Image (cartoon, rainbow, N blue to C red; front, top):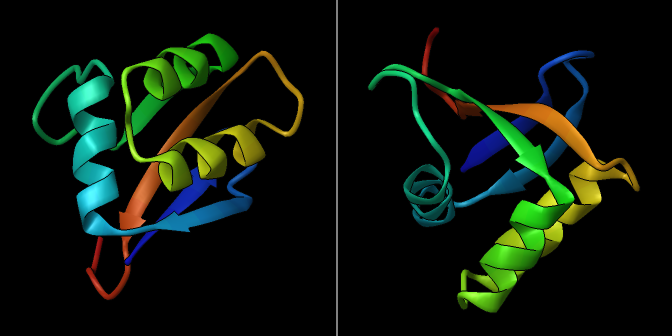
Length: 82
């Protein structure tokens, strides 16, 4: 499993599968191959939904936003040492 965090507060905001993480990585822009932080907007969620991205992933991301228009989100793979 993969844990998502609010990059600003380090608060845990959700859990996703590695397959969902791969879909998120495919959608988001990475600065480099080690990038684990992404800028997420409510519009991103709308577009992901329109393009048929996993609805559970989209719901998790919308929940992470908690009504905000945008945020930075990061992930950690559970059991992986940083």
